[in-house]
Length: 445
Image (cartoon, rainbow, N blue to C red; front, side, top):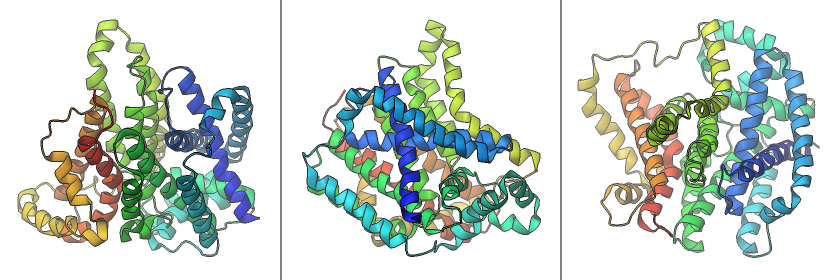
């Protein structure tokens, strides 16, 4: 029964998101020629984003039980809307063509979910950070969560970390009636599953990569030890990796005939990234900066300043969480005491520690270094404007990670050893996609 309720809870997000995708498509915020893979990924991410907004508001108003109920009400409304728009929705229902690829993905999801239903969450960081927050929310609601934030004995659990994942864990666990840890493992794997679908679908739709090669790239990610360790562990790096790639796809699938409003899906996903992990917050800033640069001239020329306020909606969960951290004086360990005086002396150490890790093909995938060469070596192929924008955002995110290492208050070798792999995982699928898109696009503009 727990497994069935877990599947229903995950399907709930997919249904809510599907109605949002159709709504955005109806109002020309997303291109109409959306492939099935991207429709599924966008539906999942929009459903997660909508639920995140609801639950953060419920957290702020001390009404989490009502928030969980509102999510189910949103499901009912979404079902009614999908029924009303069924002639459009049916276009995205999987057909029998290319059934082998679809069968492999579906079978893989259910087999891995069954395996995960037989084991607890294994990762120490997941148990000591994300599950601890989820248990406070699950057992005692907002009151217990605030007590947790104020308790100095829990400072090791990084109380400043965003709480989208714990809120979602709690939302899935409430209908079960008890804290069943396999739900968290299965939900964590669901993000990994949609990450594979997103990359596979993007490669097939936007590049000339054949089905076998696309599956090879997917296999490289799936069997990379770092992904195998984190893909279903309850950590938040794989979810962030999916949202970052989803943001890039939102850039590509935006309707360019509506140059300002069409960036709303992009900001929704970037805003979601900011509420999953702290690393998502600079990603949001970089994304908004890129959008501002691209649209500034048109906004000023057409005097459409009010249209920019639409982008404030995805920022609400982040603002709510910042309110909590400021209210209870919760500081980030990296930004509370940055070390600027040792930057120069740390540069050689940085290169000596990172370089061997980048070339560790077994640990990070044998395609990573070739992907970097493909991106940075000049090419005569014209690149899509949207892919360039996303490429600059990903590059900026990577440079930011380097900057954080240079000013970290912690021992640099320790910091790199304990964080580099997860930071790389956040960007790896997007780097793979951008590399292949830069060398073998289906269409150029």
